[in-house]
Amino acid sequence: EAGVAQSPRYKIIEKRQSVAFWCNPISGHATLYWYQQILGQGPKLLIQFQNNGVVDDSQLPKDRFSAERLKGVDSTLKIQPAKLEDSAVYLCASSPLDRDGINEQFFGPGTRLTVL
Amino acid sequence: AQTVTQSQPEMSVQEAETVTLSCTYDTSESDYYLFWYKQPPSRQMILVIRQEAYKQQNATENRFSVNFQKAAKSFSLKISDSQLGDAAMYFCAYTYGGATNKLIFGTGTLLAVQP
Image 1 (cartoon, chains in turn green, red):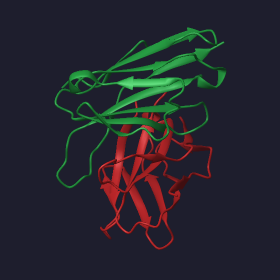
Image 2 (cartoon, each protein chain N blue to C red):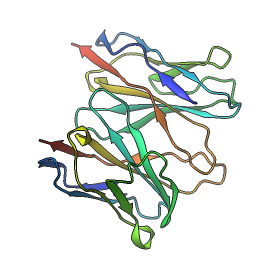
Image 3 (cartoon, rainbow over the protein chains, first blue to last red):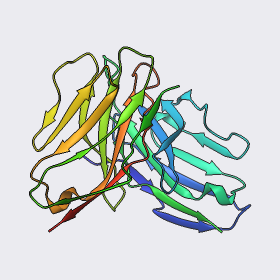
Image 4 (cartoon, rainbow over the protein chains, first blue to last red):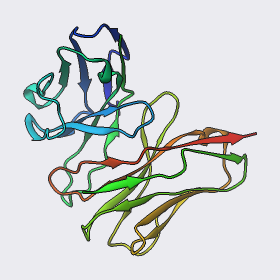
C-alpha cells in the first residue's frame, strides 16, 4: 500500500513570507497528525485531525499557523508569516481507527523548512 | 505532565554486536503505551517495537527487544546482531492512547554501526 505522501520535500523562504505544506495520508486512515521536529529534538505534535474535525491543536501557534483537512482526506499546514524559529522538519502521520485506541502512526518523509 | 527522556545523545556499536538504548519516562497514568521509532537519514520514521504497559512480558521483534520496567519507568531497547542498516536516530515515545493518541517523543539517540 502507498505510504503517507508529503510535498514539497524542501522549502527555503525568508522570514515574514508564507508557506504551505501538503500531506496525503494512507488511504482509509481516519486520523492525521502534523508534527514539528526542530533539529536536535524529538517531534512535537502541532495538530491532530480525526476525519475533518480537530481533536488536538493545543500546541499550534494559532497566530501564525493554520491547518485544514477538507473532506477528511488530505491536509494542508500553513505558516504566515514565518519566523526564523519555524525552521524545522514538518512531519505528517496518519493512523487507522482502532477499537482499543492503540493506533500505530505511519509517518511521511517530512518537509524540511529553512527560514532565512 | 508526561515526559520522555533519552540520556544518550549518541551511541556506537560494532557490526554483529549488541547495543542497548536507554529511555525513561514520567507519567501518572496506569495504562499507556511505549514505542521505539527509527528515523534513518532519509527522515521517514518507522515503528520498531511497541509495548503495552499492562503487559508484563517484554516485547520482541526479531533482533529488537525491550526491557520494560514499569515501577522504574524505564523502557530500554536492545538491538542484537547489529547491522549497518540499523544506523539511524532512535526515538522513544509514549502515549496514553484514548481520543488523542498523541505521541510524546524523547530527544533521540543517534546510533552509529561500525563495520
